[in-house]
Length: 605
Image 1 (cartoon, rainbow, N blue to C red):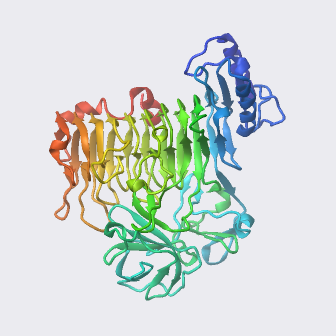
Image 2 (image 1 turned 30 degrees about the vertical axis):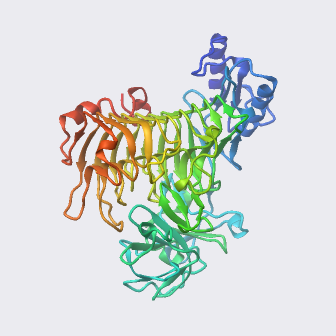
Image 3 (image 1 turned 135 degrees about the horizontal axis):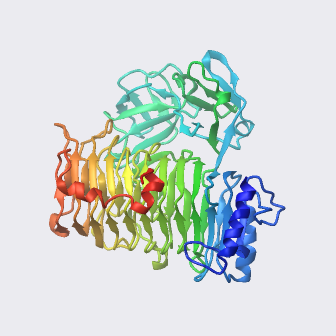
């Protein structure tokens, strides 16, 4: 059936030969075909497709090295492509100023690129648990913190099962915690058990070195030491995660690194061998990287689903600062970005269109150094451990006070448009759906951003009014709702620093909630203009439905070391009531996902 559909596609392409457009109608002689049922010894035609995308890359490079005279398309047949290594695209994998290279799902086919590995061979064990032995884990070649059954993320063992511990005291070196109630008798040291401490706008995750009922000590310091808002302190909530003795409820699991044994507690009557289990093998699925002298040009990926990427706790621990950047102390100049499943550096005119990115341990997409005129459109990002999209993804020292070292490094004129971004921040909590920092002329348009533990869209990353590369950002006609479900101190839109020429226009901002267990004051907002925010035109926005309670200060607009007169305000509608104002009803027709993509992303006609 698959090969017959390819044959039909070739006929269509022959009829359209000579019709070349940016949308991707390609000449038949410049097309390659890939199928999970193919063979890399084949010639890459519809009748003899390749088996792997890596083999198709090699064929494309032969043409690009010779000089492109036409567009090239790689048609991916339906099925799952399980990666053994990251897909890496360099300058020779892209097009040029006149012609493009496109990797696209064949018409009517569902194409999945997976960094995961199937888990099979479960055996009934003791105490209601089932087990499977994974030799690569035992050999030290593989470890994972995420497990999925039928595509659903499964929880690891947790203590307490519900609710939280409360911190009673913290040692001077910020490694040892005591709680208001005893811990379990078991010593969790050396078992890959984590202590998770929840601050106001971030969390810390550290491996436990040793524990007793009286206290626990982590392998690394707990929190970004020196900043009170990001440090462990008395009164904050915490819990333990990942331990065999903590696997007490159906669906929970534990991976023993030393023995290579995976433990799973099924529901009554469940046979794990009758369900598809997958664990992520790769940390990164796609890396598109050029150089300042030779960027990757005019490369497109269309209609593909990317799933299953791993995320492991860094050696220094995970001490969240903000927006999924983490560090150790305010005295150290280094801080780091949570890695992304799809990364772009020095890319010009590239596109990711109509794709789905999900079941990711870290962040989704990172648009980094030197990226210009790229477009990410019509995609769904879901089930993400950290942030959805990071425009300005930095891998340099001290991004809290940094800028790009040269003008060529500044990401410029990139667009994130018509995204459905939901359910992210599942592991790091303090994450944004779209985060834009140290960029020029970024456009964030017509996205729906919803159902998240922290904030929706954020722009800027300097806590002062010093001029930086960050300028000219356009945030318009986004529908952002159901935010701040777990943490506090952000909102639907969040800004930092001086951003001349930036515009916040026509956004529908609603459903601001009260963080359920974060420590600190509750102040969640429609738009939060944080430290140094300056230079915005704010017009035609509607804010409503901000949850209220006596100990909360949820406001439509919040200023913190920013001033009303530092911005231009035109025709906005702000209220806290849950009943939509008339302006919201009108704006709902325009904001959010564009009509051309609604059927694709939302199933609407």
